Image (spheres, rainbow, N blue to C red):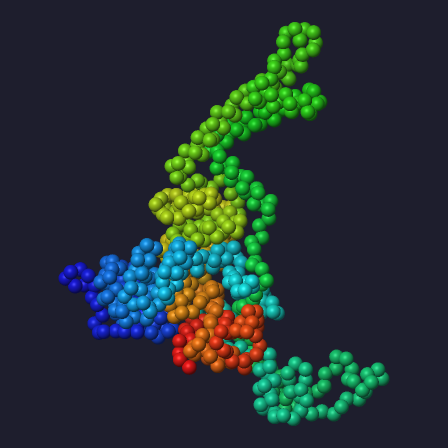
Length: 636
């Protein structure tokens, strides 16, 4: 730092570079994306070189400079050469600070590409209209679906033109899969996973044999070339055709080429595989209406009463029901019993007069009178209890106190941490109809008010995780999602949850890949996700001008679903499907041509060349999408 306490500008003048403002985990991953996959010069602007991920960012090979300024001011933007930069990414700070910095950057450089992080997505969409070349993204909104899907044990999906793309594994893969997206899947060593491996098409074997044996010889249905052979003798019922089920013999030279060697390695890749599939409708969580109604009723009882009031109400209700049964037994008239019971509850019943009793016209009977007295007293009891309930509800609402989970909470998901991501995940699960209980140690966390407005119970306090999880009714939960910003805290919460409930599913937010590898090797029925790993590719692609529609997780790896537009002057003009997919890392899964608005899935024509106005939907690795973005900005 200089003597004035500000930052140090880059040592050498720099231009046509990209600026990343922030020193958090997302900034760290984003810098890696830009440097490793897009190979562009990057300047990083941080508030403190010694905090968060700033020291690790400085060690990244390819970073042009790391500049330190305590605030994102006009002077800080000039220090990172905003006038000559090609792009700016604002991934840290509040929404207000990022809006101000984006507008200031546009004032310095009207043509710069600006991507800024916004928690309030609706506000971000409005700010986009004020920028000539800007995009607002939410890291938490990008990552939240993956966490929610992992907790429910269901595939995360990305919607494209009414179809929902998701990842299926091994036995769940159906015959109508779009493409294989990963193989060599081994939970004990996730580094072996290969994303979008080179796959042979249906005709690959036929093409290989055709090249080897030339143009002579018939071709069997299925693509295998046969050696010439004599016509088979006709059977009595065959009329010159071979018998059903009898295949012609294979020539010896082709036999050796086709038949596998018994001692050879199998052609199927070791480990599991994953494939991309499409559904016509989004997979919904199978929660029956009876389960939802039961949970809502029990939760409403808890919301309206505390433990002591509940005991009073239950005793009074039991007394009323007993007295009602006595009245009905003595009179054998259900309608009249209901009528007199309601009058007694309201305190409006008329007691028997002595004259009526003497004349034998009274309702009479000792037990009947006792029952009416009990009902009347209980009716008097209900009035102050109802008043107490109303006062408690209104009072707690004014104090802004979150409510604890009810005793009837069952089959719910516990969300630990109510930061940006935790709030998004809890909200999404609630919208799906899944019961949710949140845990938060900071009473000032921004997510408390958001989930409280939805009626989601929150367990507050900084006590041991064991006690907090017990209050969140861990024994009856279906999953625990640990979403704090600290890996060690998340891992501690996961281990405590598994200790308290060995059958609970655990989903943990982890930045460190080594941590995640140990986690997968140690625990079953568990999943790990990284917010920055899921969001950074989308931010990097947006910075380069691509539209990423969503991200799909293959354990700790990310598959991007992007839609690219072929514009005038784009390097994509004249390319065909083979050109796009040949280097690997990219699969064209759908195409929409300029002459038609219809999206063609599984477009099989590999020779049709792209023209201006065409749009293609691709599934790509991070490096594959980076290669396409490089082609996208090239001149013809």
